[in-house]
Image (tube, rainbow, N blue to C red; front, side):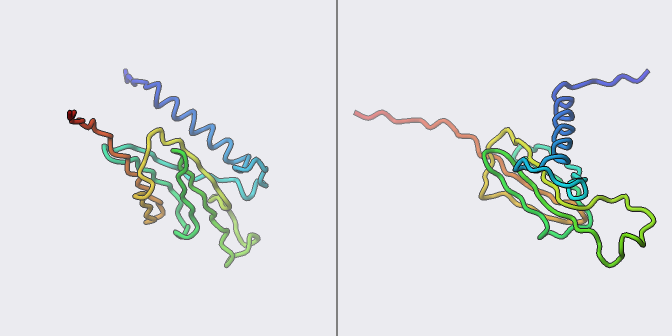
Length: 147
């Protein structure tokens, strides 16, 4: 018999991800509904934490780095982009279209302060890799008493 250990935190994160995808595909950030063709996709994202940083990998093959926008404000990471439909072949010539095209917007609550001036983003092999260095812990400072 195979035994699987359930972790409530991971289950909650999975539910949050599903809800984010649901809202990402139906409503843009400004509350205006997009038409289905431009909001039909949301790239897969992996988020993990190291001792020094939060790492976010966004899977978006076929895009160029200038098609992304990355912003951090109030501990919320927002990644936006648009994958344009390839225009060298008309839609009528396709037998099957399984890849998604159009705009996307994903936002994630980081839950920890990051050094916004040291954030880096690299797009390679179809994956946007965002490195968000954590704010160094404030160490207690011993105050010398004079007098």
